[in-house]
Structure formats: structure tokens, C-alpha cells
Length: 75
Image (cartoon, rainbow, N blue to C red; front, side, top):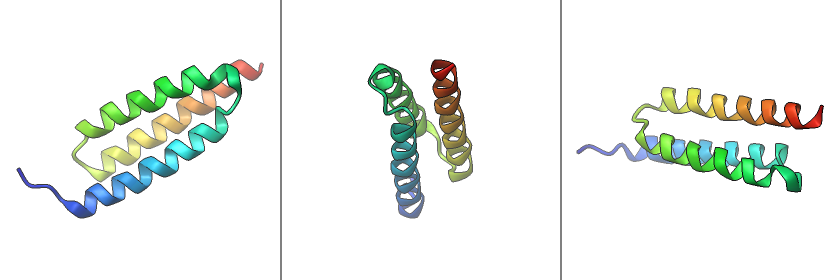
């Protein structure tokens, strides 16, 4: 099993940034549970991803879902 340390570091930094942005977007008290579910699913699926490109696509999907949830609950 080959583990690319550089890819792990890049994915960790991306995860922290995306989690911070999603947390900022979904900062209302009523959205806290939804934020937790999104971030837990992001972590679980992100562990299975072996490519940085796929992880970036997953990260974009997480941010898009956070924006959609925010838009849905603000209307």
C-alpha cells in the first residue's frame, strides 16, 4: 500500500478550508445538524477518494450542497 504523503497533506488542507467555508455558510443554529451531516459524509467519502482531483470535485460538491441548503432555508 503506497501512501503519498504530499497528497494526504493537500487533501487535509483542502478539507480544513472546505469545512471552514461550509461552517461559515451554515452558521445558523437551525442549520447546525445539517452542517454536521454534510461534513461527516464529506469525511467518510473523502477517505475513500484516492485522487486529489476527485477530492477537489468532492469538495466543490460539498460547497455547492452547503450553498443550496443555505438558499433553501433562507427563502
